[in-house]
Image (cartoon, rainbow, N blue to C red; front, side, top):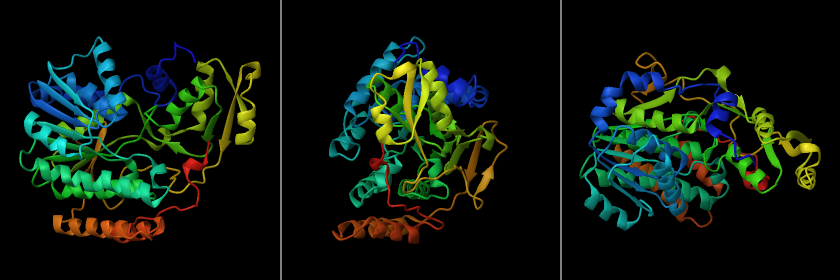
Amino acid sequence: MSLNFNIEKFIGEHITHRRQSLFLPDMEKHSQLFEQEIKGKTALVIGGAGTIGSSFIRALVRYQPAKLIVVDINENGLTELVRDCRSRSDLKLPADFKTYPINFNDAVFEKILKQEGPFDIVANFAAHKHVRSEKDIFSIEAMIDNNVIRAKKLLDLLLEHSPRHFFCVSTDKAANPVNVMGASKKLMEEVILAYSQKIKITTARFANVAFSNGSLLAGFIERLIKQQPLSCPSDVKRFFVSPDESGQICLSACILGTSGDIFFPKLAEETMVKFADVVAPFLKEMGYEVNTCASEDEARAAVTGIPGGKYPVYFFSSNTSGEKLYEEFYTEAEDLDLESYQSFGIVKNAERRSLDELDKVIDGLKQVFTNHQATKKDIVSVLNTMIPGFEHIETGMNLDQKM
């Protein structure tokens, strides 16, 4: 792999086709408000070692918070976060900066919250984000527990000392969900919106983050390092934002939004990019041409020697459960504000359930999980009753069955 590969430059030239951040005009216009709400303030970022969480941190510290606490179960990720931030010439972490490699559901987290808090800003990025996490009943239980039940528990903890701003990341897949991950995020939105009259709460739905941890594109780099073939769907296209843009839209929603707002990027349909269209320019950057293979076996066999500077790639038609061939940030039934910002749209007045109703929803999910005979189909059936319009795509295939 070429050491000269500049991910940010590649993303701008071949994926987002933007020379500067989509959100820069709005952030510059409201820079005084960002500084007013962040400079000298205290912040807690949960799940801060991931791509979006760490990008949020990089956007946040530019406005000079006085204190920053970062919690994440990924100890190695926290290590890289610190190294990355300390190595950048354009960033300076606050003097009062600590990272804790713990689960925000652990009892010790409550001790940290009480000892290090109260906080002016709390942002939660701890979530299961992969559609592959719906492959079986156990993975689904863990995903719903993390994305929904723990999010509610966190809000209950924060009621004691409410932050000025609370942000919890969502996903475009929460709009008309076709997979359990999207359904869990839709429920998460309803949970946080139920608290929006008690705490100032915002969220954001946005596009795929190019080269984010665990993503298909990041996997391309791993495959090259290990001299393994690439595998890519030929028919799936997505909206993309850069890692920096992902942090910026989250920070903007957190600071600029009013309670209950759901931010999304204003991206035209023609800006969507097929994963397959990224392969050739990526390999060209690495000094290769595409060697299209007809099967996974052929692709694996073609790695040996990689003749003629050609790299084996297996393109396939998507057929996995919960895979949506297109993206959308809102539904026809939602009220939109498309005028307040140049680069952001906002879902306003999203439907809210009462806390009592949500408790019944969560209890219903827990009952299914206590049934040892329950299957994925049972969970989907329960979610169908809880989320109007949820239409799960089931094919019997999951991503763990693919290269």
